[in-house]
Length: 340
Image (tube, rainbow, N blue to C red; front, side, top):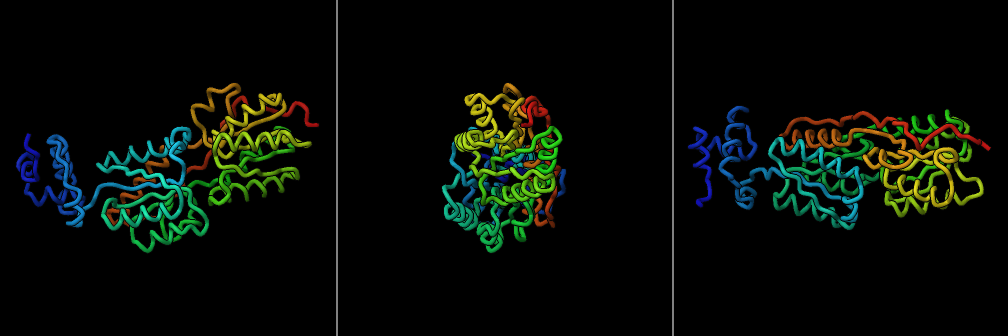
């Protein structure tokens, strides 16, 4: 079967070949209604542009990139990324863009991805996750001039726009809730310490515990995996003054912590209350179901993709503050039955 051409699309849509080129490459010069008609015809004819020819011509790739410095297995067990990618795909597909997802073993490999994508014209822009304070990726992207949106706090995003929520506010809500239930020994199993959002949570946890007069508050660093969450929980519950409440920086570690508490004979919630950061279906299926800090991660992804495509189109873009995570109380938290 003959491969469809721009001329075929132009004839079918009743427009010039130039108009088809403008519409397919995302350039100005056609009305929204005409662009929509051309894209509909192109999809119906199963037209696919030659990506190499498009790059040589300086046309848009209609692809955005996302790299993650995480093991590939992360995507199979981490609900946050699955919901984030779902939101990204929802907005990108609506505007006929694709997502190029690449796992990286470290910083240098991720930087190499950005430089290759830029030189080859493989992506029109990128999304940056797990940003660190003084992150070299920010400076590299600023130098390349590649449109980028940071999914993280603006203090660590340099001149790049960011999509973020106030993790400090959410942490304060969680600690105050536990304190109101009578808990005095509150611990936290944190995420990777170098991440900017982890530092914000740590500072907020320390400050609110000091304000409430909770001297035994402690944070144990982990890496978001179930294994690290289990190790941290055993360490905390095995101590002389074990906590009566633990806040986990993600749901996977909280699930592992609940399992360890059962293994060690610590009843939840009568002797130990548990809060997970970022809600997921698994939190509601456990016994007891996990109290969680809930936010719409899919909407977070939609907003990030929307801002990136606006930046790709040359529109002015500023950082966006999304709704913070709010507490969803469930069976894993309760008033302390024996504060002693």
